[in-house]
Length: 118
Image (cartoon, rainbow, N blue to C red; front, side, top):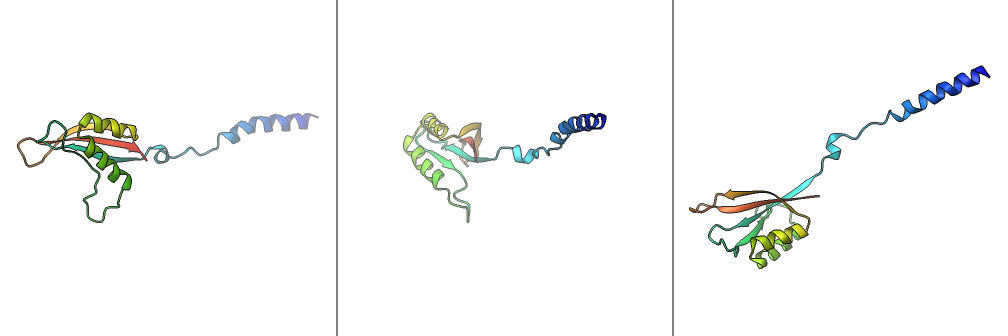
């Protein structure tokens, strides 16, 4: 009887230790992955008539992104920065930064850095 009690007590104390032996997920596995694009406002049209998306489409051998190509066509039709930002937001994109982009003219372009989780 005493041996049974000792065995059950030892087993009961060892069971929680067995659950604590799980390996936690690596930090890289938990980090979200993002894709990025830039909403560009041409410097000479402050009314938003020249708004476009830049997502690396002009890079040689770049993979084609049909979704962003269609979004670019929609953004160009909107011809408005707030309208374009609202449209991109409805597609899951968030604006993380706004900066000026060198354009070779006296007035630089404005770039809105957008990202969304993959």
